[in-house]
Image 1 (spheres, rainbow, N blue to C red):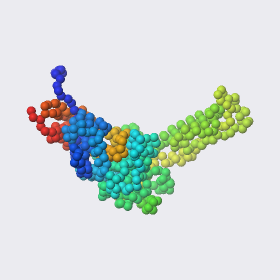
Image 2 (cartoon, one colour):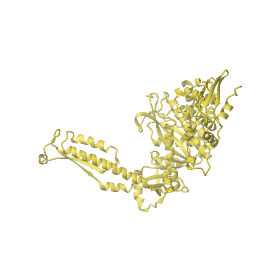
Image 3 (cartoon, rainbow, N blue to C red):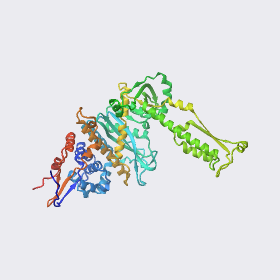
Image 4 (cartoon, rainbow, N blue to C red):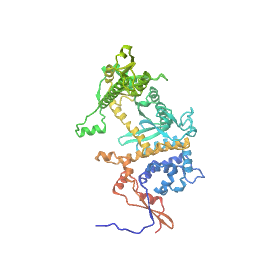
Length: 574
C-alpha cells in the first residue's frame, strides 16, 4: 500500500498542451501553413510567415475557441510557441490582423488548394458534394460594410478586388446583422468532411448561394464528375440547367406545392417500392426486435422534363416521390394539435362576444384572431364572421354581467372537414428532383440524400466547438478572412475523426467505428507539459501518455508529444 506525502515546493509549472497533441500533427499533414505561404509570400520586414501565424490561429480555435485578443495568452498557456516558434508576446492583435488582411487577398485560392490537398492526401472524393448554407450573427454596426458590386466571381475577379460579403439584415434575422456561409461537404463511409466554402451577403437567398458555390467549385476544384446535393431552399430549375450545361448532376429536395399537381396527375400509375435506407435508430430497433414502431420510407419515380424560364433550356429529370410513415404520423399529430388549439381559442372568443365584453367589437376580435392563427397551417380550415343581432335578439338576451355590455353581434365560425380530408392524402409525402444518370437508382440517390444531415451537423460544429458565432471584428475584410479560415478549421475538425475511423478494423464495434473528433479531443484535454526554469531558459518536459491517449495516437499514425518536441526543440544540456 502506498500513501501520499507532502513534498517541498519546486520551481516547476504546468502547460495545458492538451489537444495540440493531435491538432498540430494533423495541421502539418494538411500543410496549411505551407499552402498559405505559397499564396502569400513573406513580407521581408515581417518576423514570421503569415502561414505559421494563421495556422496557429486555427490551432487555437480547435484547441479552445479563443478571441483574437486572447490568442497570446492561449499560446503562452499551451506552449504553442514550442511548435510554431512564435513567442506569445508577438501574437498581438496587429500581427494577427495583418495576417488576415493578406489572407483575404488570396482566400479563394488558399481554400481551394487546401481542399485539393486534403482530397488527395486523405482520400476524400469530390465527385459528390452536399451543400448547405447557414447564417452567422454579428455584433456591432459595421457601417463600412457595403453591398457587393457586380464583379464576376473569382478567379475572373481577383480575390483581393472581390468585396467581402455584405454584413446586413436578412430573412434569417430581422434584428441582427448576418452573412451566409455555405459549405460543401463530401460524405463517404467514414463520415463527412466539409471541404470548401464561400460567403454570401446577409440578404442573399439559397439560390444565390448555391449558384456562387457551384461556380467556385467548378472553377477552382475542377471535378471531373459531380453530383451536387442540396435542400429545397436552393432548388430551382435554373440550378439544374446550370449543372447540366457543364455535364454535372443535381439532387435536390423541392417544395411539395410545386409538384403537387404532377403527383395528382400520376398518382394512380405510380409504383411504390420500399426504400432500403433506415436511420440508425430504426436499424437498432430491428436488430433488437424492439416493440417500438418500425418506420420506413417508400419511393415512386417519375420521368419528367422541366424548362428553365430564363434560358428556356429543357432539363430531363427524374422526380422521386417519397412517402415516410414517420412523417405521416408527425404531420397528422401536429395538424390535430393545431386544430384543437384553434377550436379552443375560437370557443373562448365566442364566449367573449356572447357576454358583451368591452373588447368584443369587430376590430378587437380581428386582432385577436390574427394573433391566434399566427402562421399555423391549420388556420386555413377555419372561417369566421361577426353577425349583427337584431333588436329583438338583443332584447331577448339576459342582462349583461358587471363590466360588460349588451352584445350587438354574434361570433360564429365554421370548420372545413373536407379540406382536412383532402390534405390527409398528402401526409408523409415529399419530393426529390434529380438529373443523375439512370445508372444511379432512386434507392441509392435517396440514401445519399439522407446524408444531407451531415452538412447540417457541420454547421452545428462550426458554431459550437469552433464558436464562429457570434462574431465581432471591426473590419469586414478581416471578418471574411476569419470565416474562411474557420472553414479550414472545420475541415481539420472532421479529418481527425476520419483518419481515426480509417484505421478501425471491420470487426470493431459500431461505437469505435463512429468515434468522433469530440471524443478524441476530450481524451487529450488534460494532457500537460512540465515547465522548468534554468539559466539557459525555459525547459519543456513531456509527461507520460495514458493508455487511451497512446492508443489514439497509434491509430491516427501521429508522433507522440515527446517525439514532436524532441524534433522541434534543441536538447537541453544536463
